[in-house]
Image 1 (tube, protein in one colour):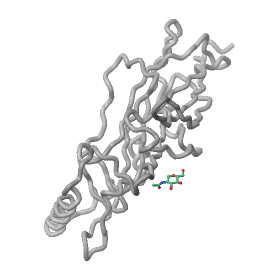
Image 2 (cartoon, rainbow, N blue to C red; image 1 turned 30 degrees about the vertical axis):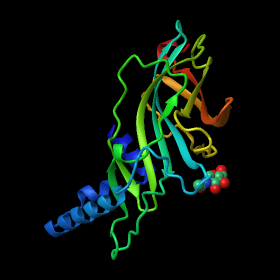
Image 3 (cartoon, helix red, strand yellow; image 1 turned 90 degrees about the horizontal axis):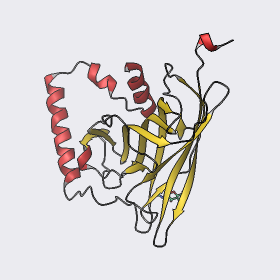
Length: 248
Ligand SMILES: *[C@@H]1O[C@H](CO)[C@@H](O)[C@H](O)[C@H]1NC(C)=O
């Protein structure tokens, strides 16, 4: 678990861990608190987290969605259900949360804000039929950079319908998992084109019972009469790791 969080922190290059270990003087602490108070006060004046922070009129906001597969928790062959554990990582620029980081002005490169104070687009797994367990936790604090870059990480447990006939190290299952912004159509929100890290196996559990063969991402656009939406489609191919006694 510790390793996973360190890896996530490194991946997101938050660089926050270092701050906790550095010795601090009372003066530094006082200064730090004052600087943060001033910045937060100025950022939050007239800030409404329900309004999409568009850069310019007529230009939708671009968001990068990355899916980290952490584990395949359960495969129910009778019901054709597969349960996954993911980290969903969102990154975008909020043009209303930008400031001058120079020492003469605010003197801070980044600030931590409460999730409820920032615009945070909902994303949902369209085929999720509901996990048998409770939803895992998420951090209530968000790191915001002076250029408005916001990085959000959520842990999600997702159960989907997926046809699994038989599973062994020779028979693989292929499941599609769709992830889409829930409440913003293409006039407001676009998803960036997938790159090679969009479907990410970097955090896949080495203790998993299932062998991950491949995870891929593509972007689709859904057209409806009045609007269209973007969604990411992840294709996950996996098999069962055969216990040694069955290997003969
Ligand atoms: C969003 O991305 C598109 C390309 O996919 C680009 O043309 C557009 O300028 C970007 N918009 C913003 C606000 O960065």
